[in-house]
Length: 243
Image (cartoon, rainbow, N blue to C red; front, side):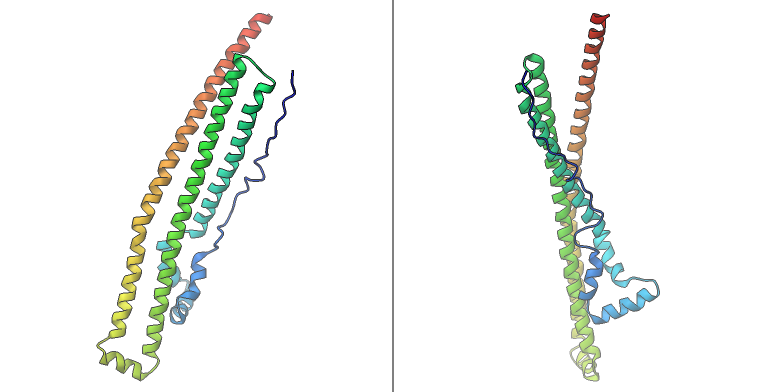
């Protein structure tokens, strides 16, 4: 009988969870982009326990850093499943070297099925990670745009408040700066609304992929149960023959 030679890879080093996202706390990064006036008001508010900029961005971002970490962990899981799939494929290829016959062929087929299942799971987890990253990219882009618009509002307020001439000009132009501020705020609101068209389809894609993963897991469980039942019968036959 030949000696089985296998080159298997330990998935352990790949399966290292991430406890925080790669971008860090996004809202803290955006504080500096909102302008001096808004930063100053935010600083005063935080002395009294109220986070003004957080209140503006939290409804858009949610727990951005935690979701970023989750997306990274889905990607890590996909890599780990890919390693397991490669190991199963190696076992299926190597089996005929040391085992022949109908039972060997059946075993090889079953291992190949499991390998294919792990490949599907690996691809599925990678797609979920990609969808979550797409949501994060869209959310970050909108938040950066809102921060930039707030910065423009900040500049307008500084110009108007800088001197009596600024207020006189504002009165003479019929509140042009105020209208510009309103326009910028409306643009920020419109930018936030674009997420309504981006996020739901990505969430639906994640939900669909999650259902496929659950179905595949159930298939694995049924296959394992059938194999265990068959093996149990064979053990009984062996016991009867021996005793």
